[in-house]
Image 1 (tube, rainbow, N blue to C red):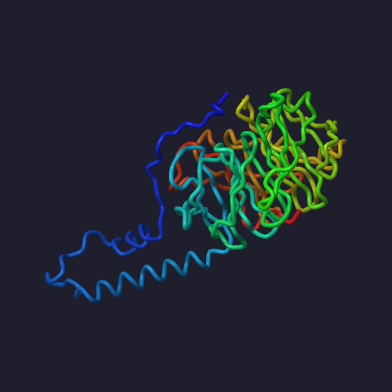
Image 2 (image 1 turned 135 degrees about the vertical axis):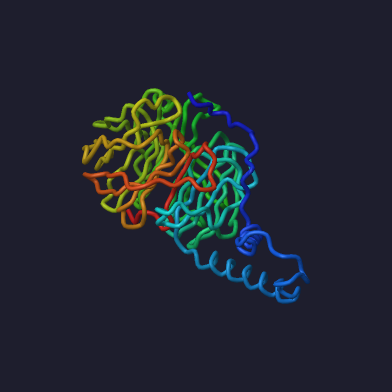
Length: 341
C-alpha cells in the first residue's frame, strides 16, 4: 500500500504572483545594468515592472475557470490552478496556501474543498479560481475526500479513511459553522474509505477498499445499505455526471494493478453498469468531471501528471496530459466549474 502516512519531504516549487511577475520582467535573459548603453532609465524600468505585475494580477483575477491539482507532500502550497484546456502544458496560474491533501472537490458555487491529514478541512471561496479562504473546521479522524453542493453554508460529506473509534472508515457530516456533527458507517465493510460522493438530493456514497465495496446512505442518514451490482475490483475516486450517473475509479492505495473507470446508474442501492471498465493511462486514485461532463481529469500519481479524457457515459477516450510545475506525487484533480450533475 502506498503509504497512508504522508511523507514530509519539502517541495522546492513555490508559485507566487511576485515570482511570476519577476519571470515576466526577465524573460528576455539578463538585462543590461542601469546606465549602460541601451539600458532603460531606472524610473521607466520600475514603471514597466509595475505594469507587468498589474497585468499579471488582472490575468489571475480573470481566471474564472480551470483545473485544481493537489499534491500529497508537504510545502507552503500544495493546490495549484491550471487552465481548463492545458494541451500546451502551461504551468500553474494561481495557487492556494494549503497543507498536503489527497483528493479535493469543487461545489456547485465553485468553492474549493481541501481535506488535509492534519485532521482539517479548508474551504476556499468561488466561483473563480484560487479565491480567499472561507474557513476551516476540524475532523475527528483522518480525512481523504469531501463532497458538497454548498460548502460555504451547507453540509459537507467528508470521507474518513479510518475511524479511530471502530477501526472502520466513515463519512463525517460537517459544516463550516458547526464543524462535524454526525458519523456515518456500517461497522462491517467500510475499512479504508477512499472516496465520498454526495448528490444534489442529499444522498451519500462511500467507496472502500477492504473489502472492495460501495456503501449507500439515503439522505446521508445513519442507515447504511451495501450497493449491489458494483463491479470495481478496487476502491477509488467518485463523481456524479450530468445524467446522475456515478463515475467510479477502480484504483486505490491498497492495490492498483489495473486502473480503470466505471460508470453506474442507480446504486441506491442497486447499481446498473452503464459503461466500463475504461482503461486509464496510469494509476490514478482520484478524478473529476468538468461542467458539461465532456472531460474527465484524473490525478495520475504513477507518471506524475494530470491525464485528461473525453468523457461520455459509454465512451472514455484519452486526450492529453500535463505536469508543468508539479512533483511526482499528484493526488487529486478537479474542474471548476464542476459537473452540473
